Length: 154
Ligand code: INI
Image (tube, rainbow, N blue to C red; front, side, top):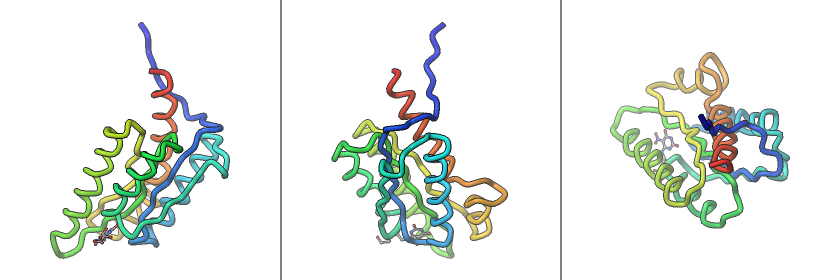
């Protein structure tokens, strides 16, 4: 049996984090979690992490695509927070963000980690930004680290 799997070590690899400003109170914690995971679990150098800020989750796919096409990053981590309001706006923003990022990942053949939380309430968002449900930014960074390693082995 031949099993191929990735570790988290990624010293020398380059990571781009594309992050939305909307709901920055939440997003800032997700971003901090992602950077912490890259450094502590991946052993990634500060200089190998680039943070790109965009207005909202809707804008994440285009920025991710431009980064991917430059070819300098080994993986992209998308960070954002879409919190449901009283209108259908949530569904459009969350749906397009998710769809667009998945498209970049497959079209450009680069890992694009989905660290965009989509919640029904601010409380659920806080839970996922470093409190009782962990930190989804850190989880996204771990996913990117593992994918960089496993893709190199396939
Ligand atoms: N952007 C988010 O990142 N999160 C949200 O919760 C959100 N809501 O609810 O409106 C949101 N909207 C802005 C959107 O991403 C775009 O920036 C905007 O529509 C301009 O294109």
